[in-house]
Length: 531
Image (tube, rainbow, N blue to C red; front, side, top):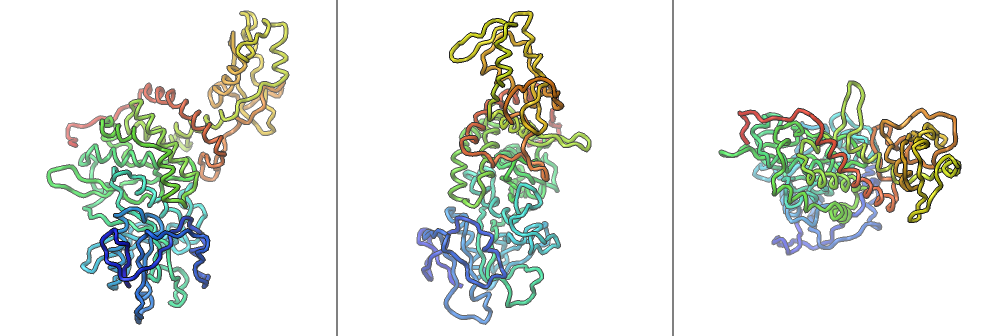
């Protein structure tokens, strides 16, 4: 096996060849029952990517002779390229992937000749529930819902790479990560023991192995620095990490200083819809300490739209709905931090509340539900407009293009009489009560309808009497994935999406004020805690 890398990284090329750069991850690539060669006709080519190709000399073992590794996602990062070169050199020397017993999916250590571990590979067809899972958790096809309803089987590797791409300047310490293609390398295949039917290649996540002493589950949080907890937490909030447990926070003990924390396993971040994240650090005392000036400066400089463009260019296979989750969560983080909320308060607003057996939407999810409800302003029905023009109240006036309604004291409760009127939608829909509005333009009436969507004065059992109040689905039951209880945002058109973001940002200050005013018990630092 020979190694060919462009001259910019100091490796002397043994051969020159072109390496494909895959801009779309096609699940047909993982169809191992198809003996035909890979169709690359619809895949763009990149000539700046390091090519780790097979040598021309024949060997007795076909797998060793033809083994190669190609970068699919991550070729722009020098540390990724260096890692892949090390793996290729090890494979050329005869080192084979070594399966690990930990975790629910297939994972393999790739070691150098001296025994040092270089990286960890996770084939996407060996993920939990995938058809080649080696630990008895297989059976489903790639692209089907996985262990998290908002993340599909076969797509965790994309998200591992995305986390590294978005960890600007190594702020949280995500190890170098790439999505790669292994050819003629022996990995697990279920129900297919014949060597001649072994697939010629596999797509896998490849992450640099980091030496460590243990994970966060073996230590109390008092040994962790505030800075490291904050940095990992900021990343988790931005990416809406659904699985930040103690086992994927590695701990490396230092000499006379706090332990270093290294976050790994980001396959369950950037879901396709707003989901329920899990943050192990949520109740650690460090999370209740205010952000430092340096951290606030980092958060302020985050640009969700620039990050979105980065994902589209560097991780193009990830869905637009996941990118929208990134934009929402980054926007939420930026405004929450600017308002003075700490990491624990931000995390609590993103996680769902359990009341007995009931699971309630998180504050973030409720904000998005309300923002979606406001996308379309309701139209006041003609019958209501006629009633508003009746002689029972003062004459309608025109002001700045709006119809101004003035009610005297006797009739200022007029609009209360219009409450509990069903909408024109065929399905049950929430209707709005509003009253005691002595003076308001038509636009204010519409805004009042919207302001009351989802609040206590919304009647979910509308009366069948009276005329129709408005024509809109904006106050109807929210659209979500009922199987997994996720708030969907990917169905919006671009114009709707931009309008949604504007409404969402306007709702945030009131939500932050309500959170600040809550008399919740604060996490207090014991005297024994030293950070």
